[in-house]
Length: 402
Image (cartoon, rainbow, N blue to C red):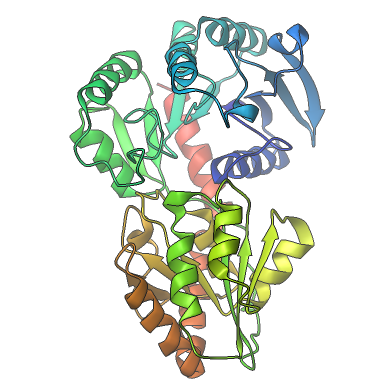
């Protein structure tokens, strides 16, 4: 089959787990003999960047363009509220993005399109696909259809359970744009599908949960318990709850523990200050490749301390792959991955004391850690990428044969 993936950013400009997921399935599909085309964005670099250009990356044809707007997604910091309002308004249904995507699709003629949450690409991508009557799958990675912040958080960082009038108006607009256009709606958690459904999205569309896929290890990584390594990997932004983790960790009265914080973001310096020169806490910035793998393999515990409605964090899948149990917030789709006393523990979002007590228990009971490691590794086998790709191939064929 000829398959087109549409994703807002794609390596080397990846900004999150959805981008990495799109890259992985693109490469896997290509390796199985499918012709894969990717449509994605690029940073603004003069008028030439508004036109699509392509290159071949690992056998995959990747088209990149900058959707015409008043500034680039690469330099959002420091923009005024008014400027951001104008940018977001233009981004809801971007005429330029519509024509660029439509022209690429007309040229490539894919059998099926798989679009991932189109932040920065614009909801006009749905209309571009539908105008050509190409079957398509929509994977929901976040809450763009419900919230222009994408995170369902208020400006003060609190979870939004009661959207304001302007947000309800936006939801009504996005509902009218996407309507029931996708042939199939996928999400890695039931939670996000339920959130969409209760807000009136895709009531007549086929929706199903499809967890993310990973390449599992053949055997569980052996761990060392002389020093307990606790790892956080992800963005250093407010709603990820890294401050909760640092506060819980600082109160542990043990010398044989180390907290490794991997990632970058606007809260980096604030979090460094909060760590208050505790030499048991290390910041690495963004890591990838062997450096990241080494930390993940040696970790005894991964913590996912989010205070927002996480969908299905790739960091949890990756931890299970290395036999590392996860302590996660009881919010969003996280509880769908973590089984208490089997592959990890759950705690109330933002509850520093509860997280502290779980960490202390595990640090003082390495035999319990060993049991959880076995459960974590067994959990990873359910998310085998080969099985994931087979499921995708089956779904692609079903909608293209209609």
